[in-house]
Image 1 (tube, helix red, strand yellow):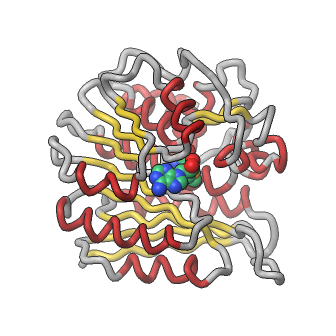
Image 2 (tube, helix red, strand yellow):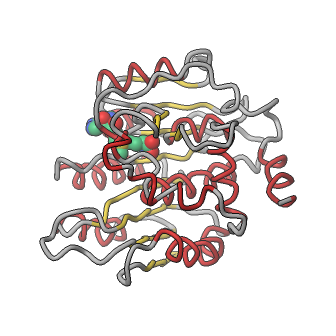
Image 3 (spheres, helix red, strand yellow):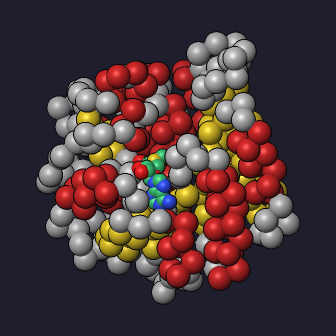
Length: 309
Ligand code: SAM
């Protein structure tokens, strides 16, 4: 599809060639955590939006920072280890992999994953830091936080050779965020993507944003959250809407009817503070496609809301 490659050339302006295609070290996750879920429907939603937010920031020459408070290991093998256990990617990225009718913004994300898999076989999946590595320009910087010792070590190894651009810390991303804001170029995307296994994460998200916004009201902040039956998950979007911000966008993709027992992830959402104005229209185009192709039963659907204060 010619429009994909031409759009991509614009995105890549200022970067010599794909960093994913020459990805140097691939040391795969050997213990949880995000590997179980790599490439699932929630990753599709999150990373596709991440691509669009980074593209938006890269439209101006002025540098920006990418701050990832919960970075994970950076890259996941889909054909071995933990990712194989439930093969969640099969109902996520795999359903888009061979399609030739992808809406343009979704095609940009799938193309990015394809550059990590140059032989055309879906074997590797990029985590949020690697998505960013592909889209940042020389003048941009990354700050990545990953608390788990082995994942942060893997992340460090995956970013070998990129130390001048990416600073990786095995530290609590919630606690570290405040000190980074405002970033020197006064432009940034902050991705907040905790595991939410501990219900305190819900509280930490709103607290970190409240503090962050006091220091850096103009930043773009993107929060991922799970659609679960637990009260904290259902309340989080409403709490985020109470934050003192100029504008927000909230999108959620449900892939199935919530289970009667009350367990399991039936979808996920992204709450974006200070979203680019084009995001809403773009999601209106893409979300029905995601529902159609990632939906698992008649409970599949999406929700999109936006507010300018
Ligand atoms: N953002 C990653 C991506 O999209 O590829 C996935 C992140 S995963 C959902 C959450 C990660 O946060 C896990 O790797 C976990 O070890 C890490 N983590 C948990 N608590 C943390 C904290 N307080 N600070 C930094 N990392 C944390």
